[in-house]
Length: 114
Length: 115
Image (cartoon, rainbow over all chains, first blue to last red; front, side, top):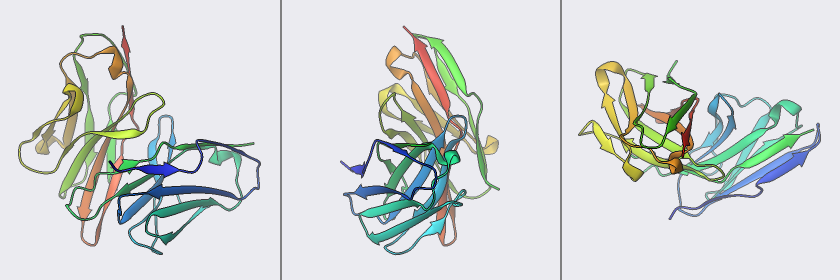
């Protein structure tokens, strides 16, 4: 079974803090994604990566950056957290081979910025 | 711009009722289609997927979906829901394009099944 893990289930941070969200997958998938999930808005793509050290902006990259130094790990960074970044953050991975593009999700990190 | 529209944000049904959740997308090229489900407190997980072939796709737990290309639709159905189907359901479209792909999710439909 594909396993995608996220470093924290719940985080509470203060406005202006730098926040790191870590994601690790154990299936050697090329592609990794960060989404935020908000009620009524579904999943919105923040950034994705299709290879080590490669990253692409998604639909809402402002206020976020990412890092992918190793294939299995994809980090999301909030340089200066703001209250409007309070949300559920989901990490996902998918293979490129096979053409399925099915994504496998982690449990999510619920981030509260006060 | 590509988009995915789910017709209902909240659905409340009694057990044994039939379910149909609508999903429409806007993209004229080749697509892969998915329904994901998120049970309370659990990961988002794949319910079913369509790539090609038979447009009627069967997934886990008795769910099925029908791809109607002419209507750009991929509606999810279940003939008789159970209390354990209470969850949030997301339709997703993976648009294959030259040089890559992009997956777009709908806003989700929260289903509550009354026991």
